[in-house]
Length: 226
Image 1 (tube, rainbow, N blue to C red):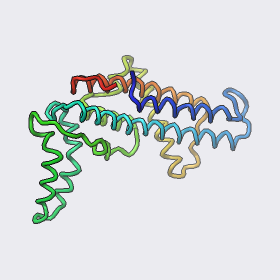
Image 2: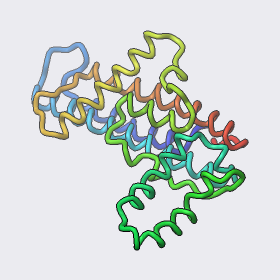
Image 3: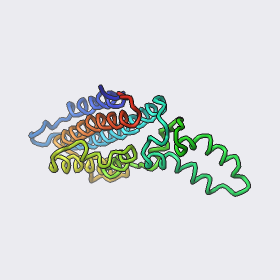
Image 4: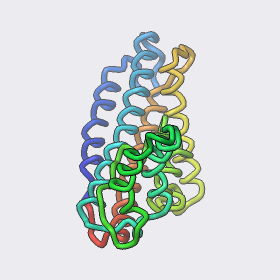
């Protein structure tokens, strides 16, 4: 079983394969139509990174919904997750002038107290868990999955050190190139070989992380989410 988010990613990745099929420069061949080849490479980077980022947000929404529907109590969830969820309303409360904090405090108690009072259940708002993420760089992926109680997601899904290093490197390169392209850096490029390696890294990470998060959710809630 896999999450709906992973199924969506698998479908989206066919777009990258289709785009590479029209590349006028087959892998290993002499460069043909360089401007078109370059544009296809850059477009593939942007699409692939965007699909990967979308997967992270989608699986986060599924995970939060699984917790909400499971009836799990707040004290069963990792503290890092609870802090991430409560951070925004606490920051808003701190910025509210004193004589107007009554409504804000009532709202905080109503929406957040279940996370901090033992034995209470409630609704986990998925958007609050990823407000800090700007791009799915490896360090951000580690931070996110750590919120769920997975200490180091890359170590959790890979046994060999060189495999872990390669996986982090490919994802970092992909996201870095995507950001460069998005910010108008025309020097950024990606060959067919690059795209193939990046796509493989995204697939490996997503498939393994999907299983790891499912196991962790089962531990936290007592039921397998997918």
